[in-house]
Image (cartoon, rainbow, N blue to C red; front, side):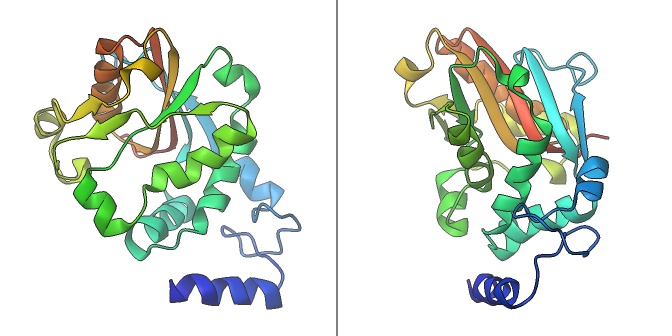
Length: 219
């Protein structure tokens, strides 16, 4: 919290600098145009390569590396929530209207209650909710993580599916039944977390579930 205040004060005193190249950004988004053009690399995930069975499609906006990785880690481990606005602008820049045409609701991948209580926020919601509302997309927190799973990145590929299996439940099935859902998360690695969420949503009546992740850490 103190770090948030100090950084906010510095931005009032000094010009806003791009978090990537540290040059003056010249815009309220915090990024310079040259770095945006390099960092935003929108990609369609190959569902077959990742052996994902329930997602209908999945898009990633940038790579989980460099300053994007730092900003996400700032949020998750240092609780610098104001980084969400900089990360959210990558969505504004990279995700065009046709990418979410036909979507009825945006649903975030949830944290387990214990992790949410410890951190104080779901970083995915802080990044994606303002973006969804700016585009008049319904924001629906319809999923709950009922099992306190281990972080997926700590596990081998075979262990990840077992770790995440059955970890999610739909708390508001009436809000997803018969709807086309955009499932959002901060990082895509193996895709198993999003696929398990898509499974729960479809079993509760969702017609289609497309994924959108900010950063890809897929190998």
